[in-house]
Image (cartoon, rainbow, N blue to C red; front, side, top):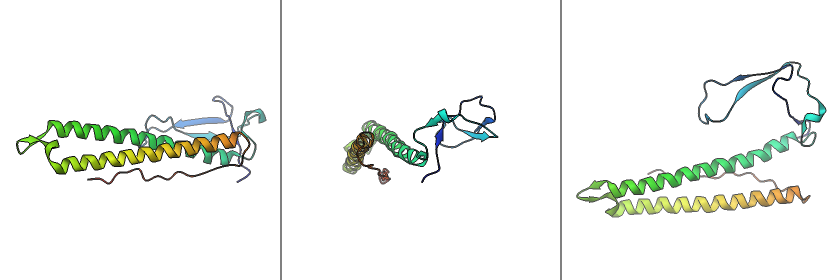
Length: 156
């Protein structure tokens, strides 16, 4: 895991160029590009973090990214649940609102329970991540963990 270091490379540095990605799928708001380093010289003062700890820094950043993506997914799940309830209240079948059918109330209750469980799990993971960061930055032994949650409620 040693031998990799992170460096700040300023735009306009001789030998550094980039090509924006025009066609991509998924996270469109993420500014991504192909980076080119052709005899690009970077001063040692542009070192980010400790020398030879770049890989560890990248892996630690993945934990925060996983938590952020899980939080975004949770927000979408909550919105879907709320919209499902509104729809079930407005839509009528067999002469009464859809929400008055017991099977629909059960499905909504099941969705709500899954969303609540995922939120509790995510809150616990955030607490563990914050605790690991406090230990790491106060000199206690590293407490690295990988978050691999199953965040997709069973589709109905």
